[in-house]
Amino acid sequence: MKKIEAFIRPEKLEDIKEIMDELKLNGLSIMQVMGCGNQKGWTEFVRGAEVDYNFLTKIKIELFVTDDQSEAVISAITRRAYTGEYGDGKIFISDIQDAIRIRTGERGDDAIK
Ligand SMILES: Nc1ncnc2c1ncn2[C@@H]1O[C@H](COP(=O)(O)OP(=O)(O)OP(=O)(O)O)[C@@H](O)[C@H]1O
Ligand SMILES: [Mg+2]
Image 1 (cartoon, rainbow, N blue to C red):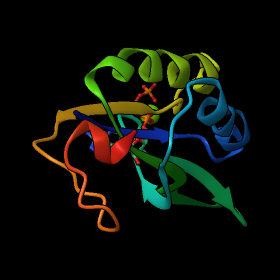
Image 2: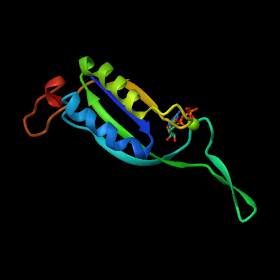
Image 3: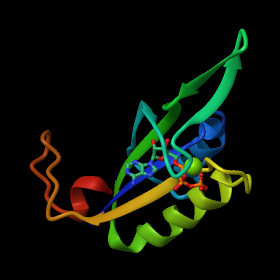
C-alpha cells in the first residue's frame, strides 16, 4: 500500500475529485492547508508598503491506495493539477504497512478496496 499526499491549487479540487470515479477509489481525505514551496510566498505592495505573504492556501489530498493503483493515481493527479506555473503543487509518496477497516476487521489491501 502507498500513501499519496498531494498539495494542489484549491481551484483544481473539482478536477481532482473526478479521479475517484475514474480510478474506482474508495476513499480519500481532503485538508485545507497553508504552505509555501520554493518561492516562499509572494510579495505585494499594500498602500505603498511592501508586504510579504509567506503562506498560500493549498489543498492537501491524502489517499491510501494499493500498490497496483498508485502510479495511475499519481499520473491522474499530476495531469489534472498542472498549469505550468509556479505553485502547481507537489506529490509525496510513502509506503504503508497495514490498514484496518474497523467495521469488518479486514486488513491490508482488503481494507482499502
Ligand atoms: N517540501 C515540502 N514539504 C511540505 N509541503 C510542501 C513542500 N513543498 C511544497 N509543499 C506544499 O506544496 C504547496 C505547493 O508547493 P509549490 O508547488 O509552490 O512547490 P515548489 O517546490 O515551489 O514548486 P514550483 O517551483 O513549481 O512552485 C506548498 O504551498 C506547500 O503547502
Ligand atoms: Mg512554488
